[in-house]
Length: 194
Image (cartoon, rainbow, N blue to C red; front, side, top):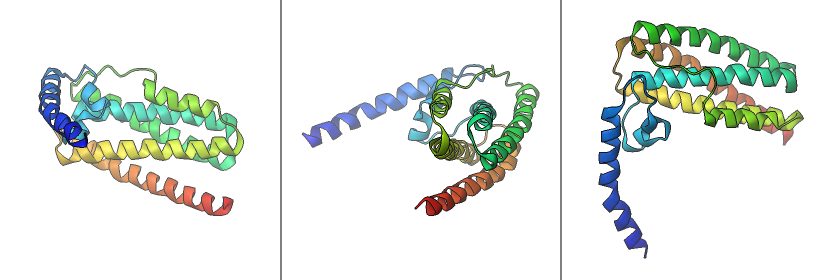
């Protein structure tokens, strides 16, 4: 039974790769990269393109700003300070994303609201209070930082635009630093709670 399942998966894998290739060649900077959004590019080892990077950073920035609004209403002083600092960095980073979108002539349609996935993450935060809110906030921050760092690292392996490559190379160490601080803070809080 297991061998039939594996054989079936192996048989359809070429079709998935070919279909992904067809979708990828039809992709334009203005159209959302569906194969990046659902993780197919990562699965088959394709790097994100410049439009994917700018689109993803824009979403991440919106998430940070909206999460700061929730932290203001539900977090303690330490969390509010952290969230406001991240929101400030996100606004500055997003100004650069918008400029790069214009100067590189990618002309991506940057939305005004986070995508469905990030909206659901924010909705989950809206339902939490007290210590649960703080724990959920940290967990979602770590998760989104990991996703963003991963996209940047994969892009820098095979960049397709020199301006976006330089921007990603500038931003990656800053994002990695903030991720390390978040993970260190989470470990300290776990030790205090335990």
